[in-house]
Length: 133
Image (cartoon, helix red, strand yellow):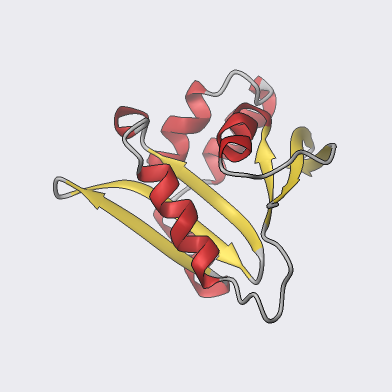
């Protein structure tokens, strides 16, 4: 529900792709992600307020419920994921961030290195490739 809430409010995600992405989200898809890479959940006042995941040195997702944004939850999740990345194996952490999230990552020391697009269910979704500094 957190991912879907964020997608619905992101004007930078093309509408056609947004609808497909929302259809693809489910509790089962989150469980599958947790089998593929490390996932973290942030609980605030007894409710899940954020979810995040990292695979090797790539942040795969980081979403904070719109009602809980700007409380430091995203920063806390990002720092937690970064701590999971082994500096002995990887020189940096990177993320293909949604265009609307680029400012969040810039504020945390990530630098945009250009746009990259993914095709999801036949729809092009632009992102920024942003490694940490």
